[in-house]
Image (cartoon, rainbow, N blue to C red):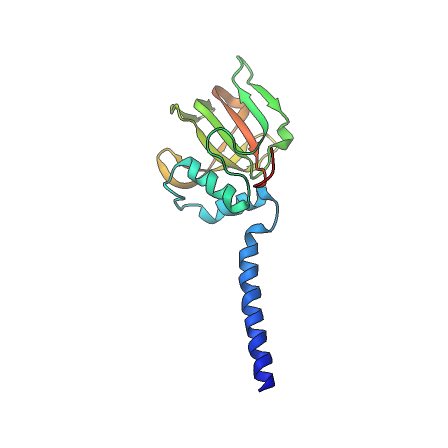
Length: 174
């Protein structure tokens, strides 16, 4: 009887620890890496109603980051506006990392990448190449209401502006 009790107790403990491990998976790694994990898991799938903000909000929430729709998606680390022959950039490009959110304000054009929407667009930076190319996860670009991948070169900004935000943990100030 004693061994049955010990065995039953052991099985309950193992089941509970498995549940804890599954729940804690979303808390492993940095905020940025958890944002990327969410996007990879949802590639080709619709998040929320299929608009770009739904992807960003859900990824930030999954990661445990502060979520606030609109123009704030964390700590601003970089921004760009067109400036004649060369765009004007503010901030440190080295702080643009995987998991950061890029917010395009109003109509924009970056090389072949463009939108005439006055509402702008948000996406998540998946990686940054040596040449400055950003690989992104996005939703609702070209009316694709599911998560897709894209790439853009901010140095080719000719219209509009953008801001890049690093996620901030929920409950923390900028």
